[in-house]
Length: 307
Ligand SMILES: NC(=O)c1ccc[n+]([C@@H]2O[C@H](COP(=O)([O-])OP(=O)(O)OC[C@H]3O[C@@H](n4cnc5c(N)ncnc54)[C@H](OP(=O)(O)O)[C@@H]3O)[C@@H](O)[C@H]2O)c1
Image 1 (tube, rainbow, N blue to C red):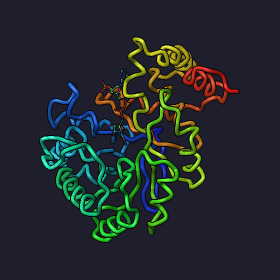
Image 2 (tube, rainbow, N blue to C red):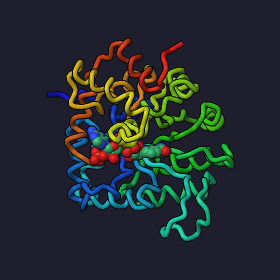
Image 3 (cartoon, protein in one colour):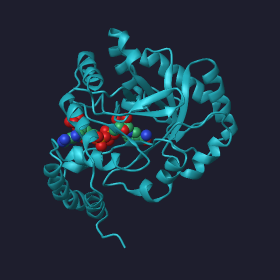
């Protein structure tokens, strides 16, 4: 049976799968004991039609890219079947970075270029498909970022560029200095985080026909931990009802289908480390959401009716 996961054109020459998979929890998950477990997850994604893999230099205390790369080095042919996204600019105080005295952001050209070199080496690849500026840096000089992007594109080390957690005005500022369009803005959105639906972030994406990527689409497991979480307690019964109506494996798939229904056509990034949940998540892509069902979930999420 063909995968229900659509592909979205992110740039003139690059498409991403409608669902992506994210490596943030790779080093902390009890399900991942070795590189064979990572390869099994990669295969689960590819078999499900999920070809877009989301990383950041900092994940796992600067350790996730290398763990993933170690797995990829055992099966290098897989690289051709995937798009790799990674991020730079967040600088954390970690053993791996003794020069950092305080957590901060760094969008200097030197830092961006060095971060990409590290990511290429760690990920065991010769190019990154999309590089994102991870968080808005109050000291960002847009001309300097543009200069770094130009060098990276010309050297073939990075194919396309985007941002993460940017406001529309921060997005516009950086875009104003670039030769090529920014390809995405990766932001948090879920029944727990509605801001980008209402603050202009997704309006800007739809206006420019850009597909945003969505992080923590399940609120980072908050959906399943209802103890003293009033939003989760309000939303869960509604999602359970919809799960039956749309014959989905679980409430996670309803929550993802709810995001996929947004007109900016976002790409949720799945954070699960369980292969069976990756396969289940693809069922979200089959749902044709009824408008009033969609609003029922919105009302439960925000805790009040629409005006
Ligand atoms: N750009 C940014 O600033 C930023 C920030 C944070 C994250 N991200 C990206 O977004 C990705 C996803 O974020 P996330 O991990 O928070 O996503 P998420 O999908 O909202 O949460 C994943 C968590 O939910 C659990 N989970 C999933 N399905 C479940 C189910 N049916 N029942 C119980 N638990 C379930 C997972 O545990 P199991 O492994 O046990 O399934 C995992 O702990 C990250 O990997 C990263 O790539 C980006």
